[in-house]
Length: 204
Image 1 (cartoon, rainbow, N blue to C red):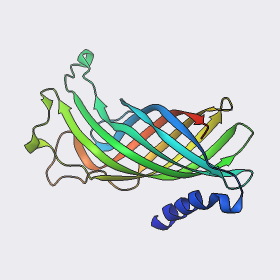
Image 2 (tube, rainbow, N blue to C red; image 1 turned 180 degrees about the vertical axis):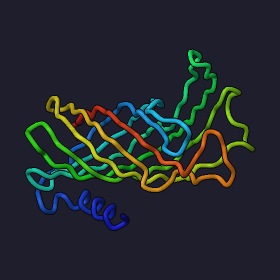
Image 3 (cartoon, rainbow, N blue to C red; image 1 turned 90 degrees about the vertical axis):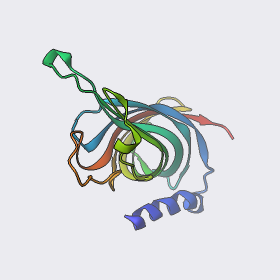
Image 4 (tube, one colour; image 1 turned 60 degrees about the vertical axis):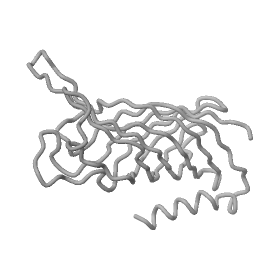
């Protein structure tokens, strides 16, 4: 896996050597729909914002590479359901700085598929239940870094505006299973994210 991610990074920076095209870039923003595999809940119920910038370059007529830096909100959410007598609430809020790198393939004039990896640095991780934010003695720390693989689809809407949809999954746990059982935590935990963003190209 380390060799694969290194290859992608090298391709991003070496792209102009094989195909003389300048880098282009811009800003991006959108939404995450997240869940955490390994907790006691299911469903992409935790929304979050995504915002940052990107740069990309063509490696050939059909292949391109790109890199991004972005703020991304992830986590997990379980809402009460009074209709069935369920009053329990649980929220996990994870804020990351993500650095994705990827390769893309143009499958038509406007459409592309892409695949890559993303390293994430955890800015903050907090959990809440019916009584509010977990007390420090009840909060189990998350790993400082997340490493995800992702697959995606990009559609060029105009010359400057594109929409990007991805599915991403942690390749290593964001938090290992605790030694004692907890009602909201059943195994090693992994980020599981569906992401939709708009990308706007800027002239440099």
